[in-house]
Image 1 (cartoon, rainbow, N blue to C red):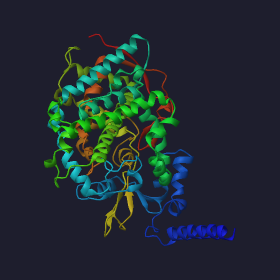
Image 2 (image 1 turned 90 degrees about the vertical axis):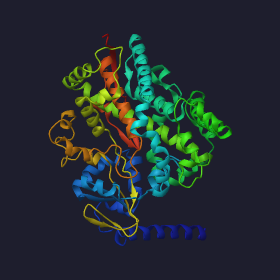
Image 3 (image 1 turned 45 degrees about the vertical axis):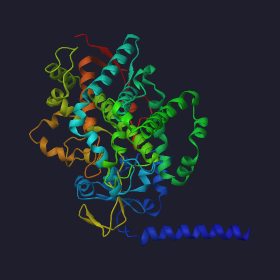
Image 4 (image 1 turned 30 degrees about the vertical axis):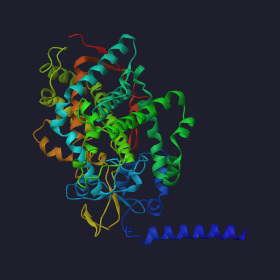
Length: 500
């Protein structure tokens, strides 16, 4: 008994010493913020897991209280002044990513997950040609094909007198698009009844666990060490869910097996896939081909990253447009100038030439709830951010929502105003639109995302008369779970097909 009490007292003493150090002797002790946040990481866990709050929303109040730099962890600072975003995320800052955030998904080597700048740069150089403006233009027909499939499914639902869950519909659209683009194959999520493909539903449901996994890394590592087959046994509806989840895993493994056994198989693909690039030693600076696990991780990273953000932008944009009939009417009129015949869709270049459509996409991206602070680690010998000297080893970050909702940059920032991007001063605003981040580690899928947004917005606005089906502002309240999670009813709308 004495030894047990001795261990407990020793542990408590060590915790107390750590708290005292964090509060009074840590290199960040001079920065303001909640005392509990400075003392221990449990403050964040309390906010995100127990109270189920989104820290980025809490931070609006904290920045008003403490200033433009707030200490939100023993070794983490968050910045509120828009200019700080460019201090952290720019082409000259080749900083490593923070393990606490980027290890949350349970992957080790995807392009979004790689912590070290040098490793990420090498992977980016391999894959980026697939996502160039020219490469995406050559795959325009693929995007239109999936958009037409989406429209056909919506028409069928309208015939059956069912409204559309836009979140599921658009995530099915982006999932099929990114799967076909990345692997030359897809899961046909758009064909699922009411777009309730198990993988789409699983992706949405899994977001709820992200705050817990991020705040309790030891439990997270234990969970990830359990075989997937065992995890599937405790999930709801495993007989429906397991086949689809394993279908995606099996699809990646099958494609890998094919090309590893017979690289000439790549010549049969309808277009270049990630395997064309990653299995070509000449595309790698060190001429070393990634191993099997690295190839799998990259596949999953691209799928999940590519299937969420674009879909969520469409949801946010259409929610605001459906509440602004005049803006929606102007968009319909503008689209008619390049799409007069309903049965002859325009080219992507024609859509890109439409000022109001482009402005609407920008405003939708500005309103996208991107609330995750993409944390970086300040290298030796430190850095100046927002006019302050920051010690090396400090975790720093800023959520893009704090740029997009800044009154210093955008007038009336909480309002959805596409015309702000058509005003004379719109050019100055471009530097403050950062939905894909900035700097050497920004999302390299930006060209694909923009193409999907142009086509999907145009398809929905030109081909359907849409009205909201009982969705309330409360339904659109969200939580940051790296992706956006809507805990209530999703955006539903009636979509009556246009006949001409």
